Length: 345
Image 1: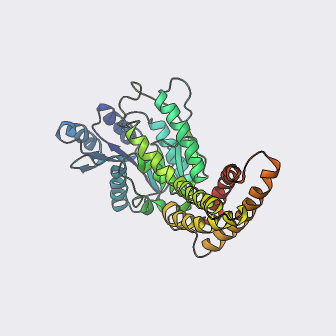
Image 2 (image 1 turned 180 degrees about the vertical axis):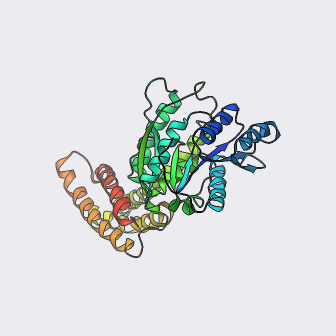
Image 3 (image 1 turned 45 degrees about the vertical axis):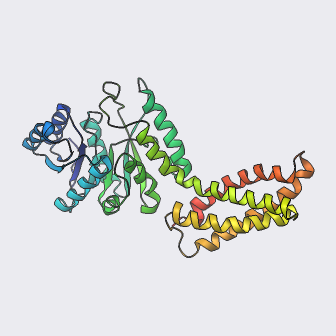
């Protein structure tokens, strides 16, 4: 039994075409542990109605989608329903319906939710032992790209076992995403929500090589990675514009490397600033963002211009070629400064 706390935590389980394991999980949570359970029937329709009827008989609340709308929409439907029915709750613990999350781990997240009411609590799997290939490597790649994009390091980006504090719920229902990309979008919005992360180690369970999961490793992974790589698109597009203008000024107009670099950077920086502020960082940074951005731009441009002038005398490279490694190095440094300082609010 979980520790005693004043405010309830609601266990939210989105389910699409579940089997009897959902009934057993519901029974253990309600009858054995006295928890509040809310299920979302994500369009399973008549063939799966008996599963949800059995869960209702055990005391679970059930919200129904007439058609399948995806895990992200089911989670948001459940969050909204819980906010209306239990406005004084401590928060929500989301779990999967396929038996991968044990009642013991769900209870551990409830305890962590009460102990860390200002953080998103993640049930993080260790990915040791007999783990399906797509799950092991999918998580490794995603957590690396996520850390690069957000500056937040988590051990398991794909876990469905999460505890959402009550203060975060209004923001959670407004986050974009209808299917599996929603859970990644939540992680990408943590900085905007001023929400920290606390991780709780949980069991790594895969039943029938994860055959019960409705996660499509190609379709849904593409949705996740496209969301992440929007952080990188702006800089790549600006780099292309910058290099094309530099080449044009240097070879067509016959300007010096220093002048060509400065003109190209002046124009491409405007493109980069507006893309970063509005398309990448969601309008963050406030009124001071432009001042901070162009302070960074001036320093970076001066350093870059100096290097393209100096390095051809040190290395056997032309001014045109040497600009590529210079800009790649400056791109990496600039990205982290923009992410953590320029567009930090």
